[in-house]
Structures are given as structure tokens and as C-alpha cells.
Image (cartoon, rainbow, N blue to C red):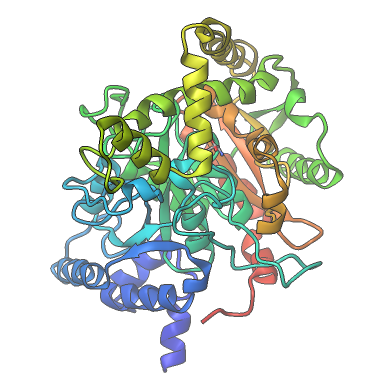
Length: 503
Ligand code: GLN
């Protein structure tokens, strides 16, 4: 009987959890307890940095009361994990930085408030790269975080979950929660989702409010879901999105019922293959793209070859614009108003210098220095202004040469599958930045992008493909993604990669 109850809760999607809760197969309290126990037993994955058992169980009880009272809400009673970049009222929010390691916000971010308003139960805050700067979750003040699976060729080595939303990806793929929030400035939802065999969507810039999200690069930051299935991504995105007057870049549009498109035919859609995304792909990546193309063709799509000459400039432009904005956003951490303060300083200058030097990690300092440099009087025109012009050209290129001809673009999400900590230690900063070569373009152009698990590498690791759409065309992306998910039958493939039940 116990075994049966356990099996019923295993690997639940949002839609299955909804059904189980409605049918009384389990309560939100039981479900929440199940995940809290799993989080504890799998603490070596280091997916969570803060949990509050009492608080989670209390909100689960409240959800159960609502369910018993016949109240219907899209996420009622569903246990979700929150990236530690979203301010949560009364719960520590650190961006995994020492400088915010004891920061407890007195307010709730709009995105997490939207999820709470739809009935979600929060399990805790997930690990991430410090201030969301990274692609491997190796810059967190709280230590590395890991995936629940290993390379076939070297099973003794632990793998990173990608970054920066590594904790969320690790938590969802290890079944420590039903789904999780992420944020994506240059790929931080899609890249970890791809490494972890999950679905991750970075919405159009302006779809989800940035209010209460710890800022990295404000013109690029977007919140989005990391989920087990495309349908779950649709459900969660609907809850997270929406106009917010507190964010001046929030778009006032009606949020569609994304779940409605799940299962709709994609016949007649035109999918672009951009030669700049295709050049230099590994054999394995090429084979996966070819397989994906054949699924698309079999589903009635037309494939269109495109060239977008500005695409190769996305990564260089990103690594000027993002650090520039970060250097400005992170200026507020001065040891005076909140956050870490160095002890025993005798002058104001010493207080600023030591609090920042001791409070920020190496990668964050590197970005602040690079950002300050590209914004400085002598270099502003040569770097920052130029990057902004390139950014405009990239947006125009997509508008004029892609979305006038196709409904979506297909590419790989990442150049390689997940790697180990040892491999990441050997990478230079620029080699690490190259992990985002396929993802940053969507951020630079403000376009929506989704990563869907499409296959396994020779080494038995998940590989994701990316679809990029025109602004506010999330429905088209979800429609196509759902078809690809079915063709790839990733649910079955995943069984082969997951380590024996971790308990
Ligand atoms: N890896 C990229 C960076 O380090 C993207 C991070 C993100 O999307 N937050 O900037």
C-alpha cells in the first residue's frame, strides 16, 4: 500500500498532480511532504539553498482546505520550487551571493505572487550561479549543484546541471518538485533545461514582470518555467505571465490560454534552419537536428533554409551589454543599506571596497570590471554604443529575413550535453561563455525561445533542441514543441538515463 502511494506521486507533472489532487488520490499536504523528504534525502545534489518545511506544509494545508471547499485554481496545491533570484516575502533571497546571504525581502516578486495567487505551494529556493552569471552553476556561494544522471563512459563523475538556473533544473529532473521557476538573461532557463532533459521556455521580453527579480541585465532578464513536459510549461507560463505596472517594460497584452494549443496540428507551419546556427555543429548535434527535421516534415511542416548574417555577433554583443547593465545594477550593493558588510572598516571608502571585494565572487567581479570598462568615457562609443547598434541590427535581421518567411526557427540549445565540474574548471571564461552561443540571440532580440529534450547523446545524456519564435508567438512554439516531445518520446528515453531511484 505504501509502495503504491509512493509510485502514485513519482514523477508527477502539473497536469497529473492536478488530476490526482482533484480525484483525492493524494492531498497537497502528502505531496508536499513527499517532496520535502526527497529534497532532504537528496541533499547531496545541492539543488535547494533554502527550505522552510513548516511554511510549505502550512500552505499545503491551506490548499487542501480550498480543494475540499470546491475552489478551483490552476496550480492549487501543486508543489513548486523557486529560483533564488525571485524575492519571496519573509523567505531569504540571496541570488546565491555572499553579499545577499542574509537578505530577507519584505515583499514578493510579481511572478511568484502570480503563482501563489494561482494556488501554488512553494517548497523552497533553488541554487543558481551567483547573480545568474554562469552556465554551470559553479559560481554559487552555496556550492556546486548536480544532475541526477551520469555519463555512460564515466559514471563516477558528477555532472553540472548547467546555469544559471541549475538548481531548478536539478530539482525538476530529480523529481524534488513538480516544476520550477527560472530566469534567462542569455540562456539560463534553456541551457539547464537542455542539460537536464527538461522543457524550458524564455518568453518574449516583457511577458513576465521583472519586478522583485534580482536584476542582472535588465534589458535582457526574463522569467520562465522549467518543467517536465511542454503542457506543464504552457500551464505554468500562463500563471507567471501578465502585465505589471510596477515593471516599466512589462507589455500590456492579453495572456492566451497556452494550454489550449497543446495537441493542435502544426501542419503547414514553416520552420527556418539558419545556416549561421548550423555551421560547425558536431556530428551528434547535426544528426539530432536532422532527426528533428524529419519529425517536423512528417508532421506537415515546411523547412526553409535561411541566412541571418548578424547572428554570429549576438554573443559578443551580449558580453558587452550584459556586463554593462550588471555593473550598473550591482552598484547598489555597497554594504550600507543591506547585504554583507565588511567588519572593522575605518573609512567609507574602505567599507565600500571591502564589502564589495569580500561579498562578490570572482565571476561577478569579472563582469563588473568588464561592464565598467565598456561604459567608461573613452570606450563607451567603441564598445557599448556599438553593441547597442548591433543589437538593433540583429532584431531587424530576424524581423526582415526570418519572421517574414517562417513561423519559427530550429537550432540546437547548447553545443554540448552536460559536462563535469572538472571539465568546467578547465574552461576559460570565454569557453564557458560559448555555452550560450545558441541561446543569447533570443535575449538580444527580445524573442521567445524554448528548449525541448529531443534525444540522448552517445554518452547517454539528454540533448535539447531550441525553437525561437517571433515576439509573443509563444503559442506557436508550444504547439511545435509538443509535437516534437511526442516524436522524441523522451519520457521513455529518460528512464534509461536516470540513476536508479534515488529514494
Ligand atoms: N550564461 C550566461 C551568462 O553567464 C547567461 C546567464 C543567464 O541567462 N542568466 O551571462
